[in-house]
Length: 173
Image (cartoon, rainbow, N blue to C red):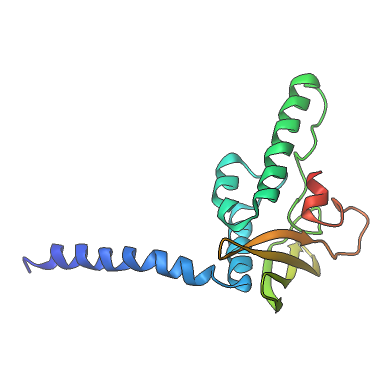
């Protein structure tokens, strides 16, 4: 029994050593990157702009252009709050990452169309609120940058009046 603490430490080291490999394998395909993003999205339940901590967590999954749009929107929002403290600032509420203002409560990865440097992945989204269920499909656009897949944009394909725009990038502009 004297070796039990050593075995626990060795087990932990084996687990931790495998974690980067699992992350790398999970995010080595367009569907894997998309799934990783939506797992974080569901866990964060983001409404409005992601917090700085959330944005930092999402940054490896998104293109530099999308992250720059998020940073620019955050700066504009901060300036608006300073200049108009009594008014509701832009990007403070509503879901920026899906077609539905209220956001999704679950998802599943659909069909992936993968080219050499670009890909599209359909995502089946669902929002359950009390007695109402809304289902739709949005499409994640990815590009290969420096040998890895990142999200370039998300096309909003829901068909209702209260949408933030036609895509994530449009919602952030």
